[in-house]
Length: 132
Image (cartoon, rainbow, N blue to C red; front, top):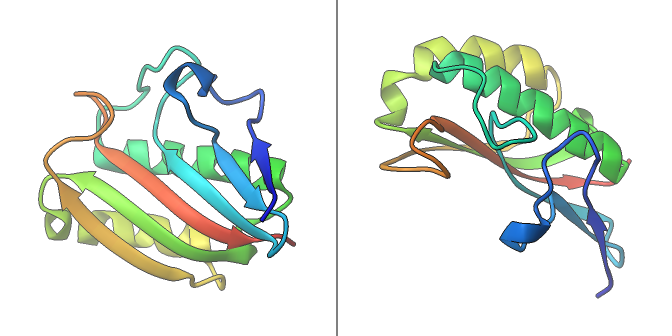
């Protein structure tokens, strides 16, 4: 396996944390995307609601997919982590996900968690995709 690191300039620098925003397995054309959150370049959130952070994390996911040579349509798997009981947010986030994913319809898992990358972080999205 050979890997290609993907770190778009529009996203924060993950090197001090030991991560890349995505890694491409060049042998299989599979893109593994690190958890995307609502962080700016200074690791600050811009929204304090699950819905707002979900939209921003999905936008960040799109940036990383584009930089990797992939797309929403090429998503294979999506894991969405939400601080708290996932089911309590499902009614509010389902329309956002349906609009974002459209006909892509990847395998999707929703997970409620006690904590994420920072106390202000409410949503994190991890994904696997194929190259276009």
